[in-house]
Length: 445
Image (cartoon, rainbow, N blue to C red; front, side, top):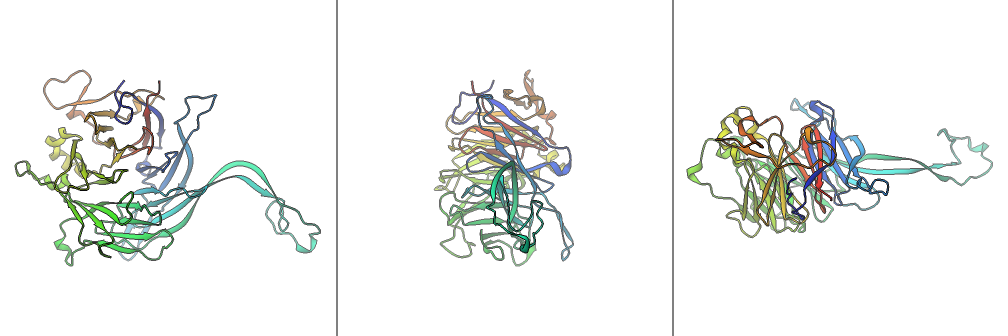
């Protein structure tokens, strides 16, 4: 067994859910997200579908069933479109899913492809009305002149039915591909970001948004960087950050100006001139940025590392974790097969004491911020037996390879974990490995 990082460092990690998706390009998982309670888990795929999993409640008959996630609802969120003005196909792939806090019995989430954001309501019905006065049981209208008595309709139990209905469609606001959406802490607004602009929306208003960041130069030949990710602060609804392909992060305050073209804080780590190479600019591009739950820190992921920044210190990160430093010698071949442009995400655990991100060969990495211990685990079909305990994996970079190690030359770069999510309150994690979704939790003795 292995040691897992997180709130209970001495526990092992075991598999509690494995969801093989049909093999096909459209079935590749493109985003994973827990809701605020962690009871629901949503995935989006390249085919424009959203699949929601619900956590099973523990029962006396199955005492260990608690934690298992089963399919709750599946619906088609986006369809392929065609932009006739630009002669461009708009693919249906779901780029991001973000849950809204639950206000009533129904759940709500935002999903987006490259151009259009949709607000979905997911509700369930387990009762049906019967005994209408103006229509028959089959739904046909009755002749009002033949109605001689009034009936009181009754609610009868029925099989549980989960419905997903689009409540709002936010379109026509992005010229470039949307890479991020983030719900604000006021729960009334959210932001969306594409390569050159960040827009602020109200959840009730679909026909207009406010442009709060615009880095498009007057002459596109002068373009030197693009926006790669953006997120709202978890507690201050006026603060947000966005990252760039140059490895910088800008923190903006919407109270300062309507257009946040001048940032309040600018986070950048000085580059070591001795380590500069042809690939330096590519591998320094930030693929994901996430605020900690406390709002004190933020985490950024570039190609080779994860960095944790204190919002009060702009000149360098307070923590840097190497994800797969052994790939530095392989950058040339990774550039040739385009893997160097892969965008890995990262996530915090519920207490901000541990972080997780993905790698190649279906490996994912976890780092304990308190003890500075780290571990590499593998999500594979060979380990997909229920409650199988994961073993730590190690990569050898040269010399004599130990028995349990895997050589860096035998890593499979087609197997990659780009999308991960951590339960907001417990040590339960979801890992998307191409077409398959794995759910792991601490081993319960």
